[in-house]
Image 1: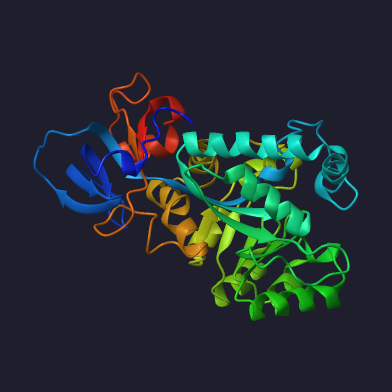
Image 2 (image 1 turned 90 degrees about the vertical axis):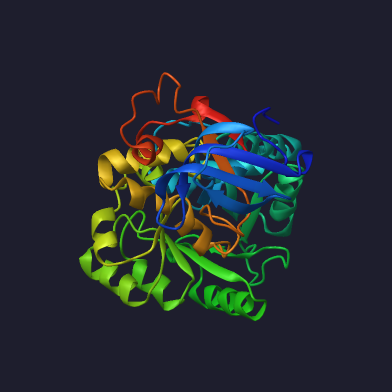
Amino acid sequence: MPANIIRMHQAREILLQGTIIYGDDFLPQSGYICIRDGIIREFGNEHVEADYEGIVCPRFVNAHVHVGDSAFKDPSFLPLSLLVGPGGLKARMLAQMPREVLVEGMRRSLQQMAATGTFAFADFREGGAEGARMLEEAVCGLPLLARVLGRPCPGQANIPESCWGLGISSTRDHDPHLLHEAVAAARMAGQAVAVHAGEAARDDIGDALALQPDFLVHMNQADDSDLRDVASSCLPVVICPRSNLMTGVGLPNVKKMVQLGIPIAVGTDNVMLNSPDIFEEMHFISKALLHDDRQVFKMCTLNGAKIVGLDQRLGSIREGKEARVIVINEKSNNMWGSMSPLSSIVRRAGPSDIVAIL
């Protein structure tokens, strides 16, 4: 485990001083926070003798990731269907890789996620109960909270009870009757439902909406009418623009989503295509898709926490919430001279700027 990840039980009280990215509005404020037993107990504007100093911000939520393909990274550039569709490269590699190699790949990606500031993540797991067990093994002992969205095995409707939710690839990949059975079974079990939609084309968006999921993933091929339907359904969307860029399927209309009031979260998608580093995703979104640093930061923290049902515990720095925070060195060569701490986190900060992760 990286040395800069501080386990809460190693110190009952920790003081962090500097620029605090505070509250659900993420307003930079000079001061300190006091952490006791892993909970943010106090925020103040005074100067204190702190354990760590710097820019203090909440840790990230990676709202859509596939860590199962971490053992075969950076394949040739291929169309999406040949990469991850039924019978595609990913399916073939998963079938031939030894179990221990797949688990090792997952664990290494999870360690990278922890070291780059992510705390909670939603992983879409293939492989039924065995796939879920492999992820549970990989994440064991790491300072991460996993939301596992299982996928039914062929011919089955149920997913493992241990899964937080049901994760469906494009509706065009499945028998419609079996899909509706799977959704009904998940609802009966109290599990969430999420669907990939509008990634390669927009023809699966209507069927995805008909399933009444809790959130959608991608929607980069959605037109204005599709986005209005999503907004009227009050559905959140998880975007993965670096992945969309890699597979050549187009980029999501993030500005339109924001205009329509669609809650947006961010995921890094398949590890075989992109590192699970939310800093990199923020850089790209803020520079290429949405010049609104506060909104982009919210997508990667509080919005993601809301989508996976964790916003009362984490996603922002407030008294009473868990102290899942990052301390960034505002005097590093990269950060020195910043005119806006929040903007610099979103546009340029990276793992080398991290002082501590709690």
